[in-house]
Length: 174
Image (cartoon, rainbow, N blue to C red; front, side):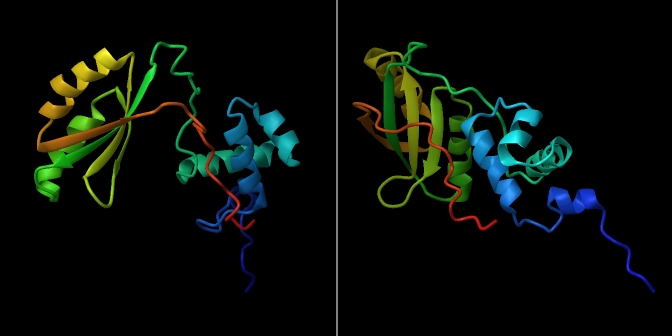
């Protein structure tokens, strides 16, 4: 009895599970540099024809390796001159208590990033504001009134050394 061959599209697109081959890694690297590339341009840059490139991009999206595409905006040019790093300490650190705080933080457009942190504090936020007065109002009127917030500590960016960095891919074997 002869075993049926796997569909070429499945092999090309990465049906080997969660492993990435050199084509997937090349696609990720190129799209990080310029997500506006057409499929034809992307295919030419990685040295693969257009159809398998398109299938691989679709697979990367479907598997969650690519989570979205967006424009990088210079915050200063749109009037957001203040970048603050805010450590919020929760009154109680358990799932039931921090869930309402997490949900409230997710709804704040001024908060561009939020992480659970180790050490002192519960959450580390990156907050954008037009100026120090606007940040002060936001912190007093909004952040300190979030559910389960016990304390808040803020540091301000004095200048960016590196921002909008790309995800390093050197650890991937392809």
